[in-house]
Image (tube, rainbow, N blue to C red; front, top):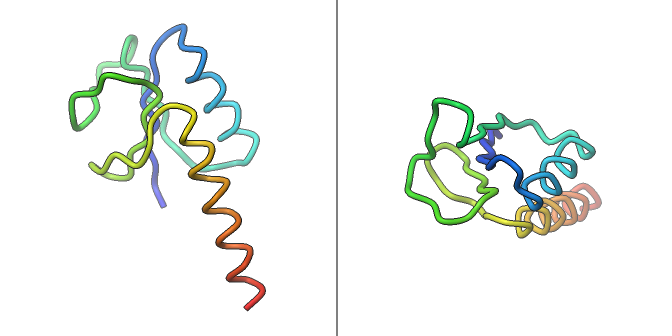
Length: 80
């Protein structure tokens, strides 16, 4: 799965989510909306924002909960 994580400059929640994704080795493309010349597919009011293609998956620290739940579900599937 290919994810794009949109972050803002000097964003505390963005740093928390980035650190989590790097620690868990979740493959993603990081786009800093303040520095990079790329905008999200839709207008956003909060960062960080996680997209898969053009679909907004989660934003804020809910991104971490999304991956934790996804990881638990995949672990249970492996047992079956």
